[in-house]
Image (cartoon, helix red, strand yellow):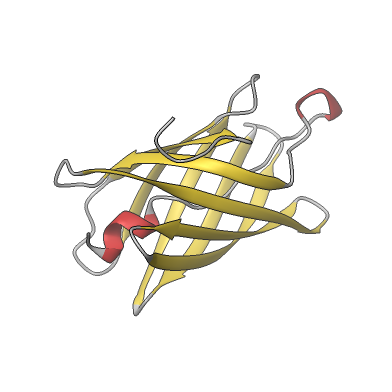
Length: 124
């Protein structure tokens, strides 16, 4: 699949202690701007106050990014690099810990969607 698919999986975060973001593995499920479905995994590691290092693995490709948690959303916004492309994804943090994202990548743009599920594995 295109690297655009990678871009889809990028960050995680939560604002209040009740919704505290979880470090660890997430299942990735998304759709590219041209309608292709994809799955993969994401690893998230705390990088300091309200910041997260994120690594996606989708279709054998890897993307890396840095995210900032915006408590007022709560919203996690992640800038990332996938190959030679750069992108951004914004995740709305859900009360159950899932992250619902909207992303764009590269010069061609287009908008994809993605969902991260904590502790899950791809395809579930």
